[in-house]
Amino acid sequence: MEAIEITASLKEAILHAYGDRVGTFKLQSIDEATSKARQKVRSQLSKEQRLVIDRALVPFRVWLINRDPEAADRVKKRVPPPQDIETAVRAAEDYALASIAPDLTDEEKALLTGRLQNGRVETVEERNGIKRPPLKLSNRHVRTMACGFAVIFLGSGLAGVATEAGTLVTIMGAAIFVFGFRRWRSGNVTSNIPEVSVFRGGKISNEGKSQF
Image 1: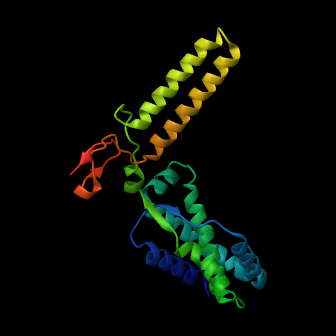
Image 2: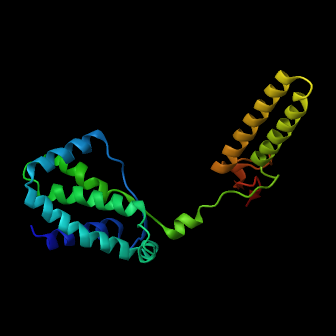
Image 3: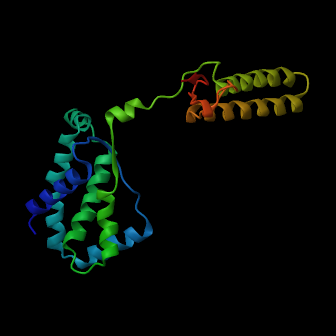
């Protein structure tokens, strides 16, 4: 198989798996089984065959960069492209190796081709649409963080009188704050309105307000 044909097959695999979606590639990590399959297929190919694949990956990488406006803009500014581009190129290399390897099981081929085919693409719109809930006291987790701050200040005051007690109170306050911060950051859905009932069709937002 010529380098041009390999490049074309890799482009087709991307378009078949992700269509026109452009953004950050989210691919599976390499596990032990995939690593062993990769070593096996490389041992089966000659130096010339590996060079053909290397030549095929060069225009494929350029094609990936040009598809992504952000990546293309970075390259124009002489900044390396995003790391996910390189990850996709390495997954494409595994895909190409599996396509020309003479002796691989179906399971090994699936492992090598699956990384490129079974990932997902997070678009710019999706990435920018991920927003954390605002810092409002109506959110119980924000109130938890505020209580943590208050306990920390209390511990600082006690430290002047009793060092051990002040230290313990400060640690407790920090723990309360961290707990509230992690809950707020994860955007857990909570309710501050006990009368909201799911049986009446009520919906609970991140701010604890009922929506009907």
